[in-house]
Image (tube, rainbow, N blue to C red; front, side):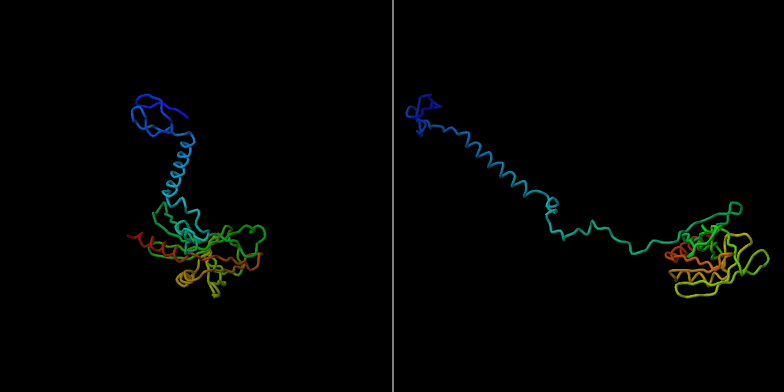
Length: 236
């Protein structure tokens, strides 16, 4: 029979006794190492369960169905296509006169030209001041055109242009040696540019036959409106 000392009177008493026969004090039972381990494991298990139930909802979102997506994180596609035109301003250093331009990106001819025009590019432009507007074509190489009418200081060129699927006759003017061709009827041409998606011009280039430049008109309406607004504010 295992004996232990009473914690009150230090009298030896049986380990299985409920109280000391000498002083009547209750006998304290010693908890075994295995009992302490068991209680410790149970306590840690309960702590882990509590921590899982208190975790933020975002930490459990990865367990959701793969078909469930967050609309907040999805990029919103723009409904407007990128503009093919840019708006610029220029000021005459001598007179202070301001001009505003809506200019397309540059484009190469549909059929490559031979030397020395093999790298030629063209662009379409709208220009305005406080009291005038004009439409022009710019070129990286000075146009050397056939079938022109020679006038005082400039040439007149009659040719064809296409806006979307509509082909129209147009008249252009070119100052001698200039890299720009101006439309003689800007009031007729500007609305067509605004209302169309594509523009195609035909030019009879020296030793190149008919050369065609096609220009994307996306964004032309907004760019021309912006240029007109700036020109309207010049006089104010």
